[in-house]
Amino acid sequence: MKLFELSVKELRRLLVQKEVSPLEVVENLLCRIAEVDPKIFAYIYLNHERALEASKKADISLPLGGVPIAIKDNINVLGEPCQCASRILEGYLAPYDGTVIKKLKKAGAILLGRTNMDEFAMGSSTENSSVGITRNPWNTERVPGGSSGGSAAAVAAHEAFCALGSDTGGSIRQPAAFCGCVGLKPTYGRVSRYGLTAFASSLDQIGPITKTVEDAALILEVISGFDPFDNTSEKVPVPRFSELLENFSLKDFVLGIPKEYFIEGIDGEVRQALSQVIGHYEKLGVKIEEVSLPHTPYAVATYYILATAEASANLARFDGIRYGKRAKNYNDLIDYYGKTRGEGFGPEVKRRILLGTYVLSSGYYDAYYLRALKVKEKIKQDFSLAFQKCKALLTPTSPFCAFRIGEKTSDPLQMYLADIFTIAVNLAGICALSIPCGRSTEGLPIGFQLIGPAWKEETILALGYIYQKTTGWVPPLPPLGGPTGGGVADGPPL
Image (cartoon, rainbow, N blue to C red; front, side, top):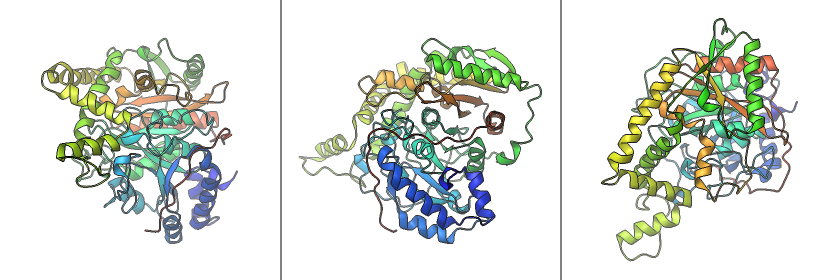
């Protein structure tokens, strides 16, 4: 096995035993990126000099000492671009570190570069980026999922040992499933959002995309915790997730199967893969019980009302006055605002701003926004009742495998349905984990989702760890076939 193919845990063992140095690790990974990233375009910014310098000073005694990590382009890193894959933030440099970045640095991680995404995290395919399309390492004619598609593609292609993404309605879990990675959406409030460019503030959460469940537990342990800079951050103890995996018992464990998630329209191979996963857990002694989440059919509509309403408010700050792109030819202030935002935002962002402004407007606020808030509460209650019967839920992550580039861009509603099995988790504010469970006949990854109650990440992580351990999971090396994508922008030393 080559160095870049290692998991974080395996890499840490070599670093601690001094069988390899942090400098060798970074140099090896940069060579890998130079070789394969032109085919998939996972990174939109690299800073070779900063990463190499950090590797020379890395303290391998720290939890992530010497481990390179990729960062989604909507999380602020001091002195680096934070463009959110949007033209309106071209040239913007982050003036501070987000809380998760501070925690990673304190743990000894090396920040390698910034990954591509759907503009302002709005999308399910990473086709909405203003800087170019990211391709799926398993088939470069396919999307990597979104909006954290760059992070998932980088991990799947072994261009990163792990990466951070953000999840508003499935944007960590869905690309993880499409690319064959592990993706964790923590409980809302578990990880600070300070430094994350907001899309929908009541739904956004930062989380890890990794090669194994063990790695996800380790990264979550590092980035979790109360933050006084984030008023939605909760004062909840942070367990030693990585130490709880081995001692977890499946005795009398009940795993729920929501009947609303196994509906018509699921790809046959996805359904078959999920059946095998359920059968595997049954062989391990897990009791399987059908449960109901009756308000699931309303989740997508509820999400797109609430998320677009919050997006229209959050994105009002991008007007060209304080930072970012500025229109050059205009008649007056109103014309300046219109042209700046018209030139800076892409079609999907404009669509969501318009939808959000509409549902918040006079005469429609009660009919749409307030009603959606009531349904959101009903969805949350559905999960609470289900968790009285079982300790976790098992569902598909996506109803299908990665679709072809351009296949759904002309039909936004079909694109929105790609997140049908992930959206409700964000509305309920609970935790969920996507885990690879096989590949289709075309070689495309398939993922399943474990959903847990709020603050019970250790339960779904342990379930996922047991699955990977008992099936002998080893992160595979994708073929990387097909046409070339974009290129990597190398930043100056900072």
